[in-house]
Length: 225
Ligand SMILES: Cc1cc2nc3c(=O)[nH]c(=O)nc-3n(C[C@H](O)[C@H](O)[C@H](O)COP(=O)(O)OP(=O)(O)OC[C@H]3O[C@@H](n4cnc5c(N)ncnc54)[C@H](O)[C@@H]3O)c2cc1C
Image (tube, rainbow, N blue to C red; front, side, top):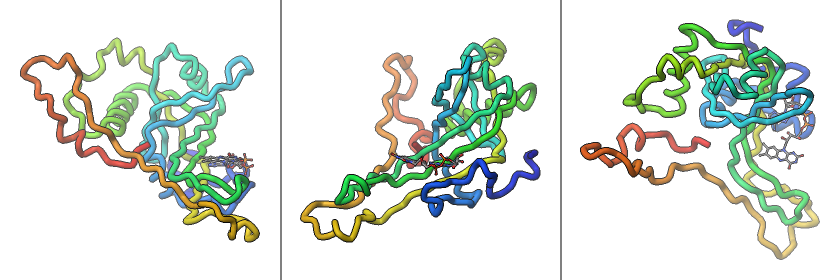
């Protein structure tokens, strides 16, 4: 499947959720919103028959997901070969405390993307590195760009958003068994929010550099996780 004919639902037999299938979200906009809220993806790599799950910073670029890392990293060496992978991105929204342990659960938004990464090279690599910085450090336009040597040490990989699934749970209240409802115990939903803390300026900022947090960072969107 090429980027142009990417199915909007991402549906394939491999991306069909079996347990609680009513929690599957087929809306492509929900996938984009989740990928744009999250900062970290868990990426599966099998090396010499052993599976590893590697957390990586990532950015969505239209119909593809971009990651970057050291050319020396095992994950990047393996993934650059175009082998199959599974990328998982999750944002936890709440813990649901039911009357029973069995019905306690979590509210979440979670995506899986299946496929194989391809190496990004040339001008597209420059564009991808620029986009990764813009997505991970929005508004931070004052940094030194990578040197030629640094860029050469960095591998950029892209995964098409072709085979994907989104699962979301957003319970307003615990789904307890009717026989447990009268139990004299607390039950409810405990939301978990994601907010930035107070930025700490580097202790070695040279004299003359404003220690106040730059406006661009104060404007970072809340809710990223
Ligand atoms: C924060 C969080 C906590 C969870 N905790 C538990 C837990 O403690 N115990 C438990 O049994 N389950 C838990 N789940 C659900 C779990 O991730 C799977 O959805 C579950 O194992 C059901 O898998 P399945 O057998 O239906 O699908 P599988 O056969 O495992 O998968 C089939 C296809 O469904 C899609 N899919 C399955 N799960 C997800 C998902 N979470 N997000 C996006 N796509 C998915 C994928 O495309 C996959 O290829 C949790 C999910 C989240 C996000």
